[in-house]
Image 1 (spheres, rainbow, N blue to C red):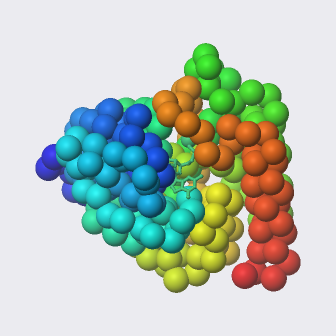
Image 2 (cartoon, protein in one colour):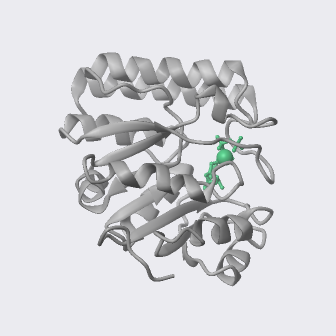
Image 3 (tube, rainbow, N blue to C red):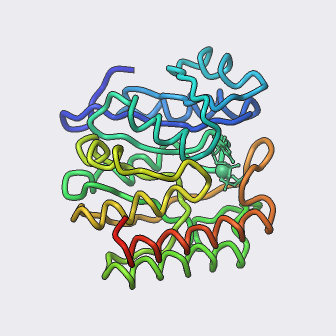
Amino acid sequence: MTSVWQGHRVSVVFPAYNEEAGIASAVRDFGAVDAVDEVLVVDNNSRDGTADRARDAGARVVQESRQGYGHALRRGLAEAQGEYVVLAEPDGTFMGRDVLKLLPYADDFDLVLGTRTTRELIWHGANMGWQLRWGNWIVAKLLQVLFGGPSLSDCGCTLRLIRRSAAERLLPRFTVGGSHFLPEMVCLALLQGQRLVEVPVNYRDRVGRSKITGSMGTALRVGLRMVGLILRYRAFGK
Ligand SMILES: Nc1nc2c(ncn2[C@@H]2O[C@H](COP(=O)(O)OP(=O)(O)OP(=O)(O)O)[C@@H](O)[C@H]2O)c(=O)[nH]1
Ligand SMILES: [Mg+2]
């Protein structure tokens, strides 16, 4: 895996907690994209064969002991070596080739966010029923309105690209280690004057067991924590 996107090295980061069912094919799928130089798996205390399978499939694996989706992504952002860092999930929901939808905007934006709320790109069987779709949209719109744009339609899409230089400005400011991490990235980036844009991406059915939005109760709790976080950043800027 040695190629570059217009002179920029590209890393893909997978946060992984017990994802042995899908991790090998995800590493291969994203690693097969010509522009991708490195697939980095952040193993978050998995008790199954996640780390071994990721390594066998060609990924670099780092261990993050602080449990949580946010902790795993923050570690990935700190460890990734590319100038462009793509966050994704190794559960079969995202497609490697969609990295190519994000990259063309990376010249002009610090962050290129995927959105999973475009109906035509939600696959049959994907966990994106109307409640989740509207929930993600409403929280995204709250963020958009309170922070004065840009246009946002999904607050929970892991698939996103960030420039290394932009990530380095955010890393010391992150406070969230849990499942409501993504809006913190957006709030902090907007407060720092970073440039953001959103791009529609495919969203498919999951391989393996769901940990966050598979249960409506958990999804609702995460959504409320996101709203609290957004209001706090708007009110106090921290
Ligand atoms: N929930 C959770 N996920 C973690 C953790 N550490 C890493 N992850 C990874 O974060 C990603 C998000 O979790 P998912 O269970 O896929 O949650 P989701 O994407 O909201 O919902 P589904 O894909 O429908 O299950 C997965 O790749 C997990 O393996 C953790 O401590 N908790
Ligand atoms: Mg998932």
